[in-house]
Image 1 (cartoon, one colour):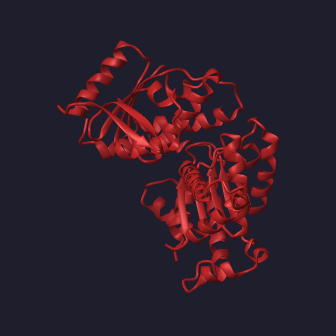
Image 2 (tube, one colour):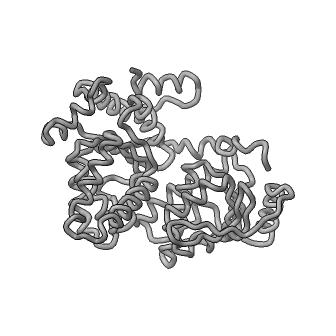
Image 3 (cartoon, helix red, strand yellow):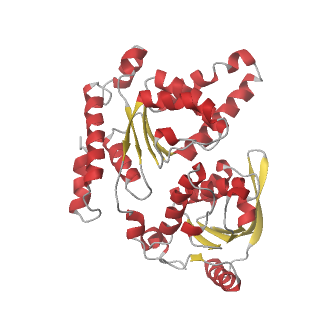
Length: 378
């Protein structure tokens, strides 16, 4: 089976990436983990997972995962994906962390409906959920691991404690160190024990690379208009007309888990919204996922400067960009400022760290590499 280093070197040889010593240090940790998984029979083809499930909890908790963090655009996701590609096709799962959380909420709601509020059985919720998830995948790889509110934090604490007891191995990328997860968040002290739990089950590694590879490869296209005004509006209208190509636009209402999402301007593969349509209403990850699955192209008009006075809108915008980016949706946007000037909240908050990622992604979504899928369109 190929190693991460071999696959990385192949990309270097083809000129797709440049060799970087900090990345190679992380690769060495991934390959050491691969070797240990092989040695512990985790990756053997014959009955390996039945064997591992039969071991005692103490034995199967010996293999620690890897949590890689660092600034945006340094190659964290690429390296994790290379590691994931080296694993066999059985018992592994790779997901953006937002999608995983959304899936967990869905399963919890389904579990509650089955129980009909039977409190005694609800105590078993997380242990039962962990058993099911462990059967689906014993190695979980999550991109953009983050915690944004205390409710999710408490769910994650209980679920991952149960998952680790099942011998599940966590691989994750993040923009922040473990000690900075949810830092300064509401009821942060309640969340602290979960950080200790994570430290017991993952090794932590900071990917320190001076170059932002996302920004280096960017040649901006006319998909991001700033500042807001008549010129930007006219440009957005012109592109929208070209995307429509004579199609009649209409208002669409989508039913998502008991509520309605209104799409004010829609054609078959594209939708146009004002910022307030998407970020000033109580929408969440499942709503954005449904929209991103339906529409290949998004238009978002009039994104304002975001700060501490619009906390909920900022969180939703971060989430929206994450989901659109992860699904490679084309985004046309008019905003009051360039992405790196769009958030002006206080420094060293969770939102500041998260918005650095958002800004980087908004820049990359303007690049030729990102947009090459649509070269035959607009």
